[in-house]
Image (cartoon, rainbow, N blue to C red; front, side, top):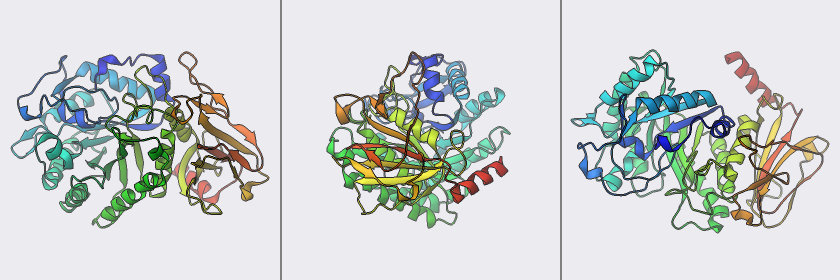
Length: 460
């Protein structure tokens, strides 16, 4: 949240952001619990309300921009709030805003600073479709030596819901929580989420929000990024979440509101390399199969797991994300490979309508073998296919910070993205060892996709 170090007027920055639209962006994370909104403020400051939180020098995972600094209360001024929201509106993003939970009145959350921000924002017509409160509350004792029980947090969310109901601009905005950590970590996330729902939160929030990281940045290795056990570990996490949610009196959608390869800022030369795309693309495919309604990538800019580096240059995962957004929309389909092979992971979706026609199909794959594979698609053997094959960009191989599309190196031209054009093809598709990509089947008229877009047209 160090706003001043980013140039929101930069055409390069705007173009890179707009290429991902429409998306939801979360402004939150660890730093959200230290943010004080002051319409006329300029400088960060310490608040003596919770001195035990200061000066610990932690570097945590935060949202949107990931810049480490001492965890102390700081000011978000009206000026920088305006700049940020002007940028968000210009590039076509939708904001999820995470309020500071470390403001209390007795045992409960004090909404006065949130009310100040909402008053300011409402007067200026700033749209905020989604809200959260706090970040990873099940880990507060471990990280900050304080506790907010799931029962208290459920009551705090009721306070937030009551607050936003007063504003015509926000009374239909959705609340998501409780933003617990991985469901397999030793900080009680499973019990916390369960108790949060049992405390009646299912009547307050619009969806369950979780975080997920596969690995620890300090210990992650190259082999782990293509390890089947690591890849498949997400399945158990998602199934756990669905089991908890379906046992609730009101089953709610599940969101991954903070997720990447490695917690702790990402692993240098791994999370920022071509290699990271295996975990990222597989996560998108599995999340779709398990019905996860939204996946928020940690983070847009900064750290080793950012989509952009500090100079706003794209890492390979940026281009992978842009292609996913451009090509895919709607229902996911089960794909069976013969013979069954977990080292060839294949997913299928409807194609997005702004590039292709309703009913077209997208198949995407991860080949984690060190040999070429022929993808024989007997259903489409006479079809004209569009190939988007992604391979490492230079001699660094899997550790390359560059990526090629159909053999062409993807580089910005001044402030403009390179063309991301497909390669026309017919017949079996030969994919490179240790690579991933997308295959579009135009003019296929998948009935479920046709129905999906027909319903979307009727709603809109």
